[in-house]
Amino acid sequence: MTLQATIATLLKDGFILVFNQDKLDIVKTAEALIAAGIYNMEVTCRIKKPLEKLSRLRKELPDFVAGAASLIDWPGMLDVYNAAHADDPLPTLQQVVDAGATYLVSAVNFSDAGFAQFSGKVPMIPGCGTATEIVSQYAKGANLCKVFPAKELGGPAYVKAVDPAIHKTISLVPTGGTNAGNIPDYIGAGVLVLGGSFSMIEKATLAKIVEEQDYKLLAQELTVVKALIDRLRKEKYPGLDFGGASVEQISRTTGRDFNVR
Image (cartoon, rainbow, N blue to C red; front, side, top):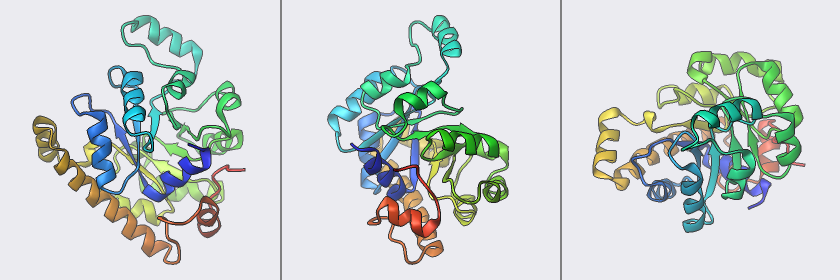
């Protein structure tokens, strides 16, 4: 899958689910997303055996856009962590790409070496906490910038405050504490794509999904999220069809640049 096609899918979906549930089947979760009209998911490397799960997902659903997240693109820290967790080490960027990752996400910045290797080839979404990080990571090749942890940074108010400083050019992906209550404010602040985990689902409902392996119920919950995002984006950009628009059309209409050259 090309870089542009992957970014187009993320923009079409408007939502990135963080797969961080070892008790859920990764393929069945992806199928629930598809049933909800969402065609991507990031597989966090905080789960057990992420490379095996990512590889299985790409093999069984080759057209599904599967990213890898919680990546640490800094050899010094990666070496320390993996020395202490030799039984289940964190993979490198190259390893997740080899396993089939079609986009890369981190809670922190990507290194210059990471950008040199993958920028322009695989979409990169680094974690950022300041306007300087957002601009510098974008300048190095980031396609979107993850605002993390979004809730602790100030939520929609932070995005609204920092957006003028980046001249409303870079597309921000708030992740951490996103929910139905604040999604309208995020989209109102100019957000096109939101990240969220299973914590967006009410606790009792999620417990039922996990305990009963109820992927139909999961699809229903995800459908509600997707419908909300679609409605709010349509209201903000009435002339733009995110479902059928190209990356270039979305860029022209919203003013956001996705580093696709």
